[in-house]
Image (cartoon, rainbow, N blue to C red):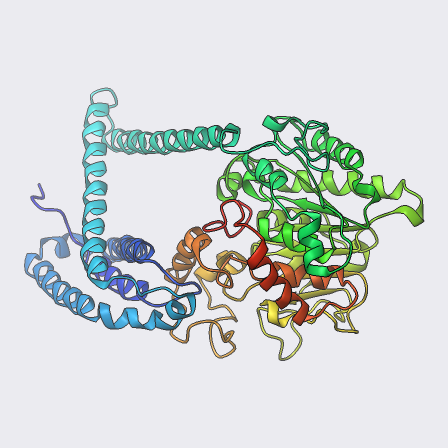
Length: 551
């Protein structure tokens, strides 16, 4: 009987490599907490892969028992690994300097190397011990099953299955508790004030009840510039923007919400405005506050913005619980609003626009899979899609890469309708070659959401290497599995980065809407003037310090 747990030499080697890779920069700057998570998970992954490969090699070569009994070799490998680990820890302060450019650009400090050196190994050891405890538990349960099932192999399998079910049950319980917390927050109206204006959903004149809007919906209809604010920027007479919203508690199906939203927009006079914007929200049902305000300034207040809620939880949670929810909501909204506009006399129709960010962009793009840009603009005068996830089928259909085209800014046809822009300063608002009906993909070169896909596990992408975008750190490199895991961690934590980094497009919405709506006289200087004006007159948007995308 083995008296001490076996330690895999190949597992230790890959764990060591995983730690070193975890220190290298990726697309977004990191806090100390994120660096600790990365420097914990990558070594654990490396050890798990290395141990599995080592076991498989020993089993295939028949050398398993010999190597297990070679205590001297095992001890020597542990000594070598300990020395290598000490070397890696000694290099940590130097390696973290590779993130200097990203940290300085974001106005952040570097991750604390003493905390990384102390916390990461502690967490690794703790998680390894937890894993071994689960293994022992499985063995004990397997021995209990052996009293009922005479087959040792089957009873061991039952022990493992029992522990797996226990772990899944605990994870499910935690997710259920988390879901309940989001539901409670979504229903809580104590910190929000009901709007009085008839131009807002949830007001006394509205067809939609205030307490059914959901937290993000209530934020949306309670926010926004006044007519005086808009006029203060433009210098021309302005209207108070219309904001319409339908929450899940008011109507329980995409079609019911879309139909009610059309009626709510009609009640508020939205179809009489010059422009009408339909927003497919992301998780939580939120409309990005900077996007909503920006389009209202660009339209000089003569606009109605309509949105609905299809999920009370964030995007990642929505993708687990209801992966097709955004698609169904987008289809219902597109059909309902295009039909309502088509019913109006041609000379009384508002210019119709479509908007989606992140999961909302993905869901609304799926409506048009199989169509070409000119077919989309048959119904919409303009479309703004922001931070589309890498799984977009439509982008795969439309994007082409002629010789010399960078991987982060593909070309769509001749560029007269649809264009990609990796940053706001790469959008030519007043370009005469861009037609009147415009589709714009804001697709940052530093957004993990836009580039995290399965192929990253096994092959180096085009955007890492000699053709890298100038905003990517020079030390960013590709490693099989590890780079994908780094990007996944970036994906889950980059909602807290400053504007212009990762999935935070707050500094790009004004440019995006000016390009798509193309009002007379607008150019990059006008957008700069709007940004400066908004910084003075607009109060902080709800959740603005941390929220970078809808949900």
